[in-house]
Image (cartoon, rainbow, N blue to C red):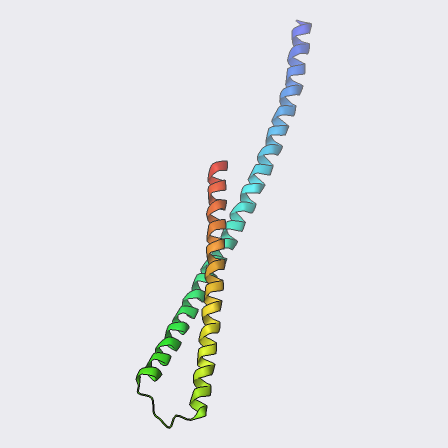
Length: 127
């Protein structure tokens, strides 16, 4: 009876240690999940912001292109002065700049969406 008691007592110690280890492991996993969820929310907000900015830039580019088309199809006058040419040149430069910025933002958005999708997949695989 005393040996059985000693064996049970030794098992209790081992089981208590295993229980504490599992609780600690669970705490790390839970903390990791919270951190990942927070990172996902941050990335979602950044994606939303980039989508919004991309729409703004697209609208601005379309507006500049339509202005440029209107000026081009409105019939060019022979007496067009250099001031109008400078304005057209400035508009063209601004349009090109906005197109480049739009491309850059689109690339960044795509990269973030890919990263976000991989994070979601990783979280789903973890669960």
